[in-house]
Length: 116
Image 1 (cartoon, rainbow, N blue to C red):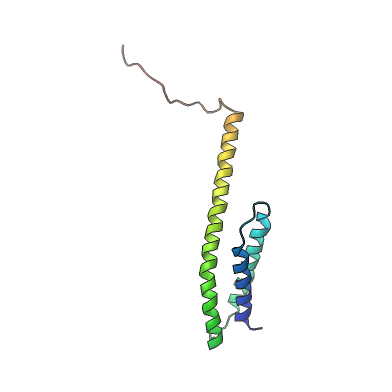
Image 2: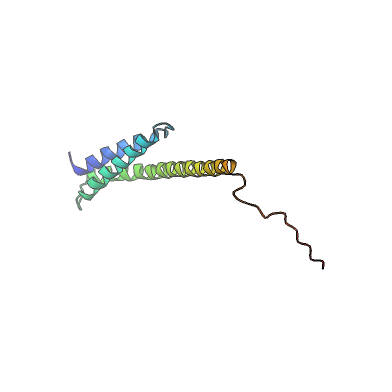
């Protein structure tokens, strides 16, 4: 199999994998599979020749179109992960406030009388 066809196959696998929703329970394995496919694809792209044939050029155009969709799906996944991380941090901070309610003293509402 030529290198461009191998790149196409890995890109297609990545594209199909990203079409599935990110599971809540098995998020680690989902992300690991994405990283594995991206690394494999990167290695194959480095092996590509400089002078493609016409059929390889057409296949390359299909890969580029899939790549645009892959990039948008990866951005969406990244936003979801960042949102989950910020939610988790917010929950940790809220739980910390409940556990130690007098740890941070608020100075809001103080009044100083300037009369002498």
